Length: 196
Image (cartoon, rainbow, N blue to C red):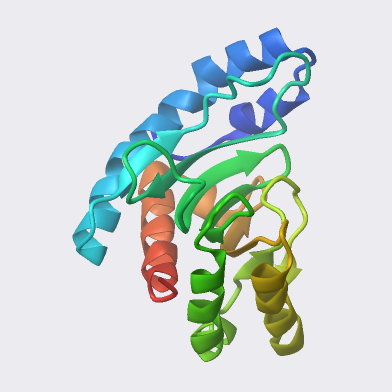
């Protein structure tokens, strides 16, 4: 119901928009919807703010099949891109559990200031990564100089983004069962909540 398996990763090897979307809708989207329900309640309970799930529908795609899919959580009922948000999703290479902000948001300045104040907290996160582009698979290890530069980039560059979290490649112990995966995401979100 909740954890991703080889079948979910294999969806991204299917050629063609229609075929990949059909597999995505059948195989992976039900899990994202279940995670959306579970973790919107979890985030609401642990932050005191109401969180809403937003499952990717990939509606704007007309030719290229999606390389990733996700459920995002924000305090806005109608969308998440305009606010800092949490995400659970996957590429063909890994599952990701993230918190941060993307370039569409008018809140980037404010979030960058928060991240600057919380640099020590971010540096203390073990086995966490940071991403400067939510649309790409690449991520970086969190190191002091790179972290500081990435926060400044978020603040000063129009296309700047910054997300923090964890990634899990196929076969990772966290993907062993629903129970194990839910506990892993809960623990990760509790640490990421400290960055809000």
